[in-house]
Image (tube, rainbow, N blue to C red; front, side, top):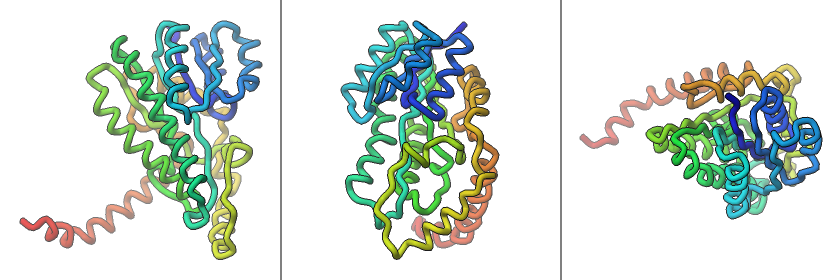
Length: 272
């Protein structure tokens, strides 16, 4: 039996690729985008199976209205995929207040509003799956992406907590954590700060590490996402790509070694 999926940020990249994969196998999709023209090709190919919804996830009222529209149209929302978001490139010192607030507003609050909006419907139907598109940068970090890193760390904490709160209602939560992929996330979708000359070496070192071999092919990801939403026991976290998990293991091992080396100091601070 097909599923009904609401996916935000479906105009391009992962969102559009996954929406098309769902539709091709017979699922129903409510797809949100700021510009509905980006969804015209899917509407032409799949007709009534797709419900395009114009949405800016920064507007909480409109997010709730969009989720309600999807529920009223299809009668059920089995899966919510919070995919809307973008990258902010720039060092911490370079970042303006507006750039920082806009990044958190979209990547964190937009995801929060959609999660809140869908929960009453999922609780009432006794099942649901909320898939949060996070990033490996929600567990480890890179320079020049500090506010983006922070936004995804927030998504990690929010979603892990949410999973523990809604499990009794039959609602699952999964954090999808891709490494770099060849989408336009770092291109047209991205925002860059005004550079300071003091950070030229930091930026050049960062750019030097962006070799083609570390980027995955986004067209290869639908199989993993389909398996995820079809699983009766989906994981809390799913890494996408060959780089993410080995990197996290390496960083976590180093962290544990450092923490253990300070164990005596930590224990004494307990006071008992």
